[in-house]
Image (cartoon, rainbow, N blue to C red):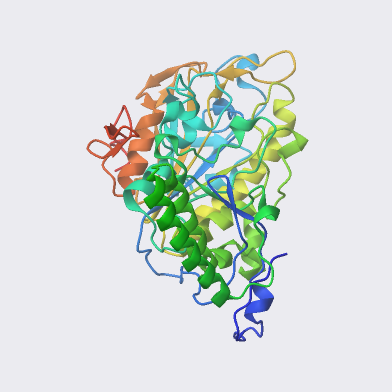
Length: 452
């Protein structure tokens, strides 16, 4: 555990000193590890009732592809081999029903919007589409496009120099495409996600270094950097320089470390979210049932983060669909409703957008193992916050839940809406690529009219 002390540690109102509470695990920025955090000079933002000075988005990736007809689009008139054993329940919005295993969500349907006709997904087990609007393509992950978090980092920059604009909480998985927190694409490492559990931390630990010594080392490093750039003028150093500056900014502030420290949160609030575990759900190769991350995401956006990504659950249910989904849906139900409720309690419902979705839907027909297989033809999505018009369902599927029927909605239309909520017009905003050519954020740039 790294400890970096200033000369005069001071006590705080809770009796703890700077030395006591500024201890945290490894952090990584764009895959490069950072020294652990220090300093206690500012408190985390987010006083109850205060409007954020920025807009933010929390992106929840349901790894593996959730079953649309077992969550928000139950087909009770279909044959048994299509509809399964789950039953619908009424919500607090007349005429809207959802799965019986989402009872908390049913009581706050007026605060969410459901899309039942989502399309545009290939048969790819990857988070790329859900974090960027682009699947894996000929140019690699996300087809070399930036994720939403990276694009926002480039277009809007940090709210506070000590807080990264883009944080990825996704855990590492054996199937690497599940654990993409959102790649920067052609924007490069300077706009990659800051990951609080990075590898290689041990190689960059500092020992017995004071704040004053750290600043001396920063000045020395800058002098070497100026000599290096003057000697060779290589452009690839620019991204490294940006990461280095971010590292020093983080090291000399406490905003990020306090946002990540859930022990500072009231135990009642943590229990309302459900806590959970960092272990992969059901021991499978997928996201965790870690409801604490919903709370951490809220704390991060209050601290100044513009985009937080995380993964949740194991939704690739080729077998035992109706045995395992009740467990998973209950945990998702608790975490997502606690987050939405918290945003409203703290008057953040107009400032923070929430999206929860997966890479595709599941087959209408139940297979011989009691599961549903991959179904790229249609999927579903939950949206909340961001000042969006909630309390509605957008689109529908046909009688068997096979394809969009009314109001098909493309994944990129959701992204255009999220960008719009962040104050970015996807219809006009461009980012220069590595060759300096302006690139639009999306191919489909119109936001969803029903939501704005």
